[in-house]
Image 1: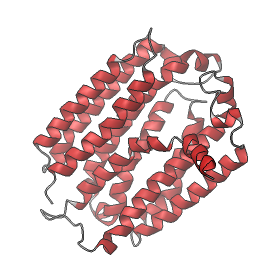
Image 2: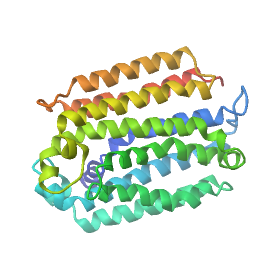
Image 3: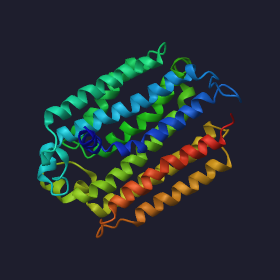
Length: 304
């Protein structure tokens, strides 16, 4: 049983949930802090347990469904690519039927988890469109080089969805209320699109030869890396705007912003057009730290 569970966790890269989860958490922290100096976090654990459980279940189940579907949709492509031929489906470690079952179960859990936000019905009403976008990414590279942006939007939905779940009724009355989540969502979109372009540089030749669309396959590795740098510059610009709409943020957030800028500079220093051997280090080490650094800073700066 343990080996089977490990196979499933490795299949969906469960550890990579860390990329999006901190941004949902930081949006939630800002959302519950907007009703006044004391915030709106109730003292009774039974009251806030439902929305916290809802966010965790939605995040984990949605990402699991999306990742499992991606592995299922790409199993033939992965088998043909030397870099990915050792993945679980091409290697025969798990059957396509079991992966499809995981997609169905995870999708059902995602939709069901939105019921925890009732009487706010927006999460339930938006669950299927969101799920369609997440699963649709798996086919994006078959027809558009903007697949990287598609993935960016998929993760950028995390802070927006958390905000809708916690402040849906306020958002309906005053759309401007969601400006912090929108800025965070756009920052995540640019950040993810940038590092996904870096990661895709490994497969530039394979994608071009097999008619798959990606920025590196379309414009070459050198120009793709420059594009990723511009996207990460946009990320930093958007993150710099957050204190303008969340005035509680101060010096701790500024310190985190400087640290994130340093991490992004370091990430780009690890990869060159003629040397992609450290792509994984750039992808996993630097990017895993960014969300956690920002979350810690926002949590420390807000007044509780």
